[in-house]
Length: 119
Figure 1 (cartoon, rainbow, N blue to C red):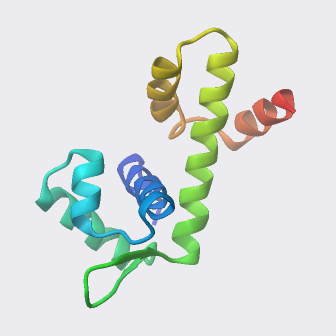
Figure 2: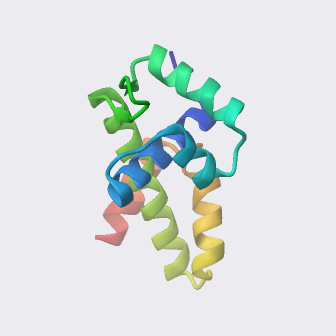
């Protein structure tokens, strides 16, 4: 199954929350993303059924190896795009917001070229 933009955003959020807090539960995702509990619950179920995450008996969410690879890829794209935009004079706030939109549609080839350009 191809992971859509919303799934990528959830995985990236889980990665960020894990790095920040260690443990992640659905309520943490609700607060971080500003989505409703039912929306997050549905997304968690889909990510779990597609083996991107696991959820233990206490409700703690962990990325699987597959999920971690995808989350880190999106997270890296976000950083690279934000960095290039800021180097062009875009404010950090705007660069970060725009990077969040661009990271889901930019090709691997373009990201690799940008990374090479940045050194």
